[in-house]
Image (cartoon, rainbow, N blue to C red; front, side, top):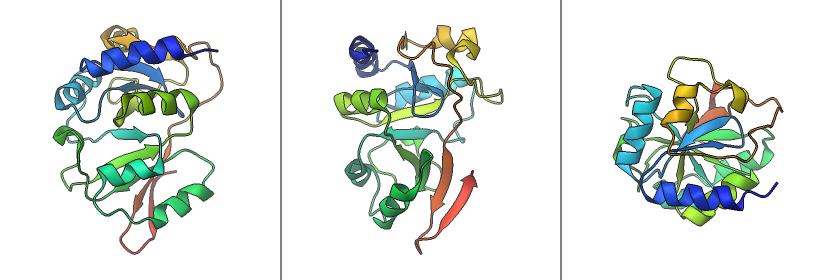
Length: 189
């Protein structure tokens, strides 16, 4: 299916500081420009989520990590090359992101996506994209578009049409913390 119209509409909303509801490489997500603190705040409000609970950021390329993380350990990319499941990495030293997206310890959760729609959108936006599950905080993560709470759909400034009928089983990404010594702490398997 062609998603060009969806990407163009998403870009307009994201550039205007809005929130999109979109399919990711894992589950359906709420997204915004990760460098715009007002847009990030909107997502916290939609999800009814405490700002102390950080959200994930999507990037299209490994090289983009260098723009948003101070001195990342490049060994992490070898690790990611060996994983088959989408994996979010918590990096120390976040830079260039909306301050309300960075955890109190200065870390940021980033996933490099392989999904065509997400990669195309992020490359066209030329900025990182927030990705958080499309649910009210504390509720279960919707597996399909049809199971997303109507309040979440209504709160989005744009709802992507692409993949709304997709019924493949999706699950959230694995989450790891990359340690200074090059070891991994698994936070979500």
